[in-house]
Amino acid sequence: HVSQTCYSRGIAGLRYSQAPGPLHKRVQQGYTTGARSLASRSVTSLARTRVTPNALTAAGVTLCLAAAVLVPFEDRNHLLYYWLAAFVFVVGSVLDILDGALARAGGKSTPFGAFLDSTTDRVGEGAMLAAIGLVFARDGNDVAVVFTVVAVAGSFLVPYVRAKAEALGLRGDVGLGSRAERVVVITAGLVLGPWGVLQWAIYLLAATSWITVAQRVLHVRNQLLGGINGNE
Image (cartoon, rainbow, N blue to C red; front, side):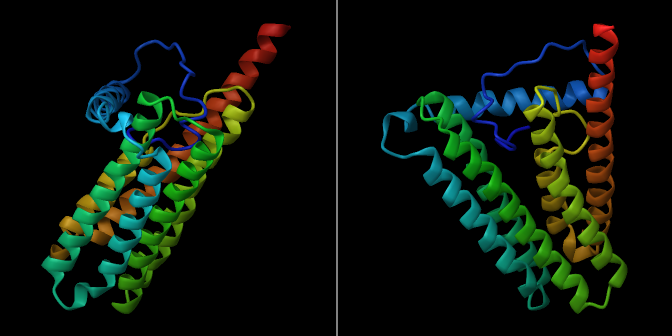
């Protein structure tokens, strides 16, 4: 996915061969590859400076936290604060793309950097979803609050399942809802928030997150069964 989630720097050298998949998978791979290529070109000059990937990671999570702080102020001006939060959140997420690209371009990948990157991804995303849940609670929308909690749990489990799979030497990067898709859904919900779309974006996020968890669990199971059968 476009951001370097789930130990991406530490496993940047891993590549898996696979046959062309469904259309959504080919589209996902297309924009992922394109985004990473664009990010790599954009940090070529930055790699020659003293700016470190960890500095970009810190800047990215700081902006995502700032975006989360802005969301509850939507009751003062829906359009202004939702759109401002969406803009700041996107900028923070872009910096999360650039930290991995900078690490690769400048040969600055470190185990701690990979750990910090995956951890701060959860912090920024969790803070944004918590802020959105606060808005729903304030409006008395209990159903949306429940789905926000479900979305948080699913969003955290998606990279966790991948990490556990890769710790076993297996692929765990399949599924509909990687962090790139989650950022798009959250941002779209904020942009359209003044017209009541935010809760529907959270419903979609919750569904796709848990579908992705199920897809990854089944994929790991199939790999393990395939390995057992192949050794018999």
